[in-house]
Image (tube, rainbow, N blue to C red; front, side, top):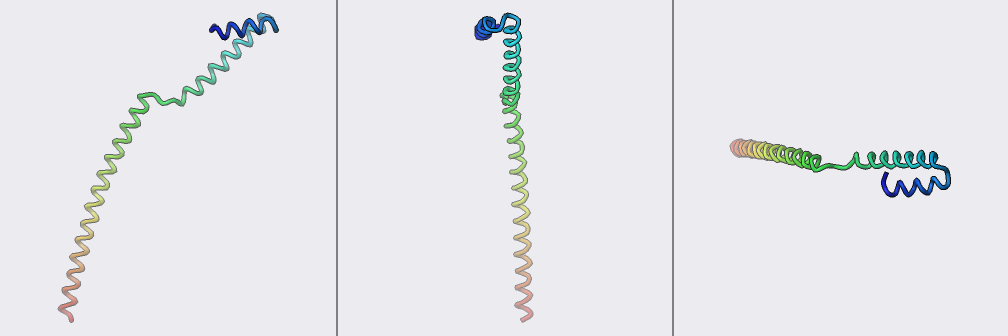
Length: 96
C-alpha cells in the first residue's frame, strides 16, 4: 500500500471499521488502476512514432514518383497536341 492508501484506510477504518475500510481501499485502488490503464492505452510510444514516420516517408516518396510520372505524361500530351495542331495548320494553309 502507498502512503495515501494507508491514510485513506486509517480514515475509513475509524468511521466504518477495518474490514469495510479494507474493502473500500481495494475498490478505490482497482478503479484507479483501471482508469490509468484506459488512459495509458492510447499513448503513442517512441516505436509507434518511428513506425508512423517511416510509413509517412515511404508514402511521400511514392507520391513524388507518381507526380514525376504524371509530369512526363502531361509533357507527352502537350507535345503530341502541338504536333497535331502544327499538322492541322500546315494542312489548312495548303488547302487554302
